[in-house]
Length: 162
Image (cartoon, rainbow, N blue to C red; front, side, top):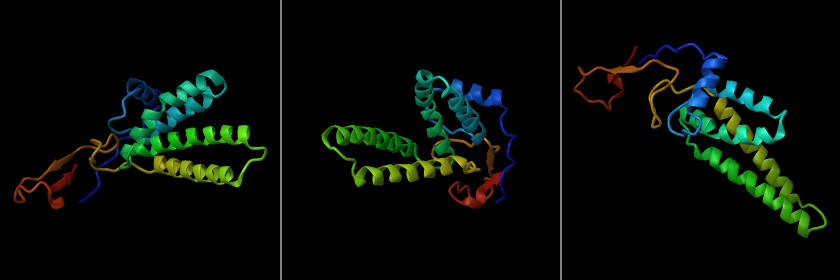
């Protein structure tokens, strides 16, 4: 089995157009170039604080599709959001009801930091070159099934990449 040929990376305009067209879509897969060009827009939006949070929330489906492209579940992003919200709530509860911060909050912050690094590492990984449970690869060309081998589609020897 050989790997299919990859299509060239997306330009800034192609990537942002794809991201905007799939703004609320969590199904399917997204390429690295689409993800990172859009993250550049998110980073630039931090100049205007009220817009940056909205743009960051709208980029979450893109991050989910990017994880899908690497074969991972979008629940990684949901867990990140839940842990971040829990950290903010814990911080306010501890500061209101306690005169000093605790080490538990520091440990939780460190664990969340490590978790976010793992998600960034997943988003940096290359696309899976074959279809996965989330759909066809947006980067690699489609594959053909060779029906000459007992018509067994589950056998990996039947898959031939273009």
